[in-house]
Length: 174
Image (cartoon, rainbow, N blue to C red; front, side, top):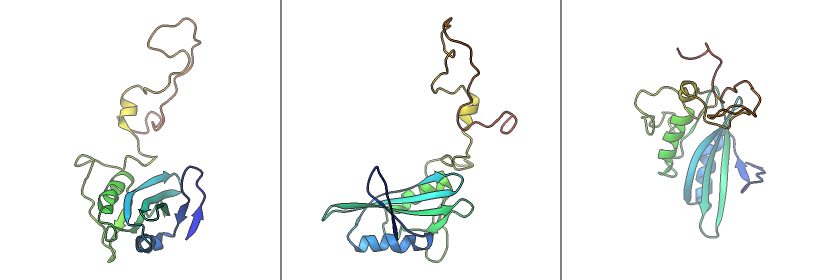
C-alpha cells in the first residue's frame, strides 16, 4: 500500500486492484468501521480511480482508499461482504461508470438498474458518453461576447463555441 498526497484532504492510500478487498477488510479490522461512500472518477483515457471513504470513530480518523482500474477491464472485487452498505454504492458505480464488482467466486454482483430508467444504454459519468441534451438544445453555459438573448450593438461577433461533450455534426445521432 502506498500513500498519495492530496492537498485537499486526507492522504489517499493506494492499493493494487488485486488487493482492494483485503485492504478494505484490513481497515475495518483496524477500527475503520464507518463506511461513508464508494465511487469512481473517470481518469480518461487511462482508466478509473475507484475510491472508498472509511472512518474510525475512536480515535477519530478517516481514510480514502484508492485503486486504479484499466479502462478496457474495469473489474474489481466487491466489498459488500465487508460493509453491507457498499452494495448500493457498487450498483451506482456500475451503472454510472461501467465498473463491474465481483464476488469471491468471480461472479458479478447485482447489475439491475438503480437510478437510470430500464433500457438505458451507456454509462453517463464516463467522459466519452455523449449527453443528448447538449446536442438537442443550446448549451446554457457562459456566453461568448456577442452572444446574448438581447440585441447588443456593443459586442463583436464571434463564432459559437460547441458545448463540452458534444461530437462534431455527423458523428452522432440523426
